[in-house]
Image 1 (cartoon, helix red, strand yellow):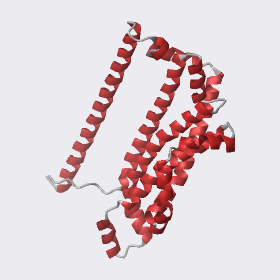
Image 2 (cartoon, rainbow, N blue to C red):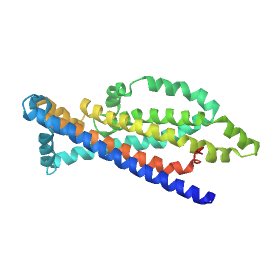
Image 3 (spheres, rainbow, N blue to C red):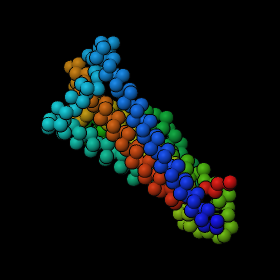
Image 4 (cartoon, rainbow, N blue to C red):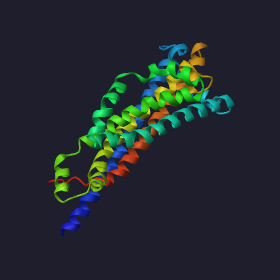
Length: 275
């Protein structure tokens, strides 16, 4: 068997192994979630848990079916979606380029590094009162807190990825008189991709937190506002339905980012496996 045939056979085996592991993970995850929901439903049905305080999967699903025909619910969804997308996308557009620049330039790192670390140490939601004072209780105060919550993780992950690129690769590239642009596009950027996606995943959670806290604190619409109103009137089913919406959104975003990360891994050189 030739070397090319061996390589092709190895790639096919790796693909089959990855497919099997993916299906096993999906089935195992579905079974664990199903078991958890069934146990939760049985605990409420048997009276071991008071639905006034914890609700149940069936009651939450009933609230969701009712909400489909409610215009106020879709208005809340629209408001929360806008707040999240505006803040998160702006954080990506600012955080990734600035993180690459800070990691690439030593002077910028010395100049902006302490400020970024300081912002990371301060809970961004503590800025919410002053943001409400500046922008009011409309969408823009929530946009600001979502942006501040998301941009810092993206910045830190991106510039950390740039600064952790292996020096030996850079040394070899420089020995062949590679330009700064070539170094950046062929070594720095591909090596930073996993760090960027790690920051994006973490930032999505911070962004959703910003939406929730902002709407709980000062808002007239949004899923967080719906949760706050339901909690004040002891509508536990609606509260859990709102929590489920945020949880589902976070899972979907993470799944999409995982797939995008696997797509961009093609930039990176394949890892050699010694037999």
